[in-house]
Image (tube, rainbow, N blue to C red):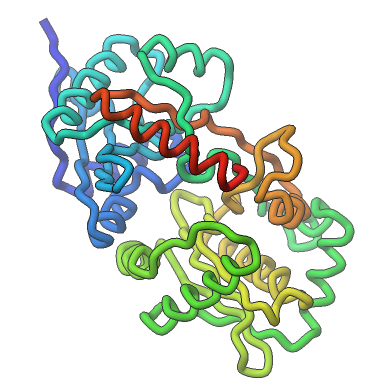
Length: 340
């Protein structure tokens, strides 16, 4: 009788080789995203699932030790056939076993499957519950960058198209800054953005770890836009499997009344096309049918570039310990205080 087996994968070629054969629409289960989190100080596990000697699934787990509780989170995964009931059951039992061994309170999962009633029911049957928190760009905006520049521009909102063309004659300079200096600039501009929009900032260590992990495989660049030697905007872009991802960014207060951000986006699209990308994922936008969301302004900006929204299934939590409810109450309270 054939049995499922699980073991940790420590070979990058084996891991990426499996992903290469699958339709993967994010970098969140990539080898280098695992390295990013490891370098940033988190414990990671790369689990592979085999059946009859064939690799049939992978799962990158990241352990989070926080004041509100210890847990594992899985973004954009596991990568497997969700219609294979036996495989799904084996993977779930394995994850629960690992979580208990690591004394995690719960598992938070945001798989790369669409937000449909069928998928919601699938996770409800497995014992997962709706998470108080989101996990890594559950609502994203995808821009098709195939075709000529004029074709891409025609698919944009009229105002966006006009501001891009206008920005090209306003003296901006687009540069690569793949260095610790560039990370410092990005972090500084992020903090200026935080001051204007009141969101929780990402640590500088994460920016540096991501750049270190991805840039060696030519899968990342940190870009800045200057005018008169003043840096106005900085962006860290991931290039993975034919898609460019607008992952981290920051802008100065001086940039607000300029077209620097439009100049940045247009140049990212040009760089993505040079690398053979066919889509540009502009990352997080506000959920559908939600008024006064904190991403409302950035959503208006991103949707102006043409494209379509993709709504992944919202993060689900699987309680492992009764202590999970301490985390749940804490996160629900914080969510209410922040008006999220």
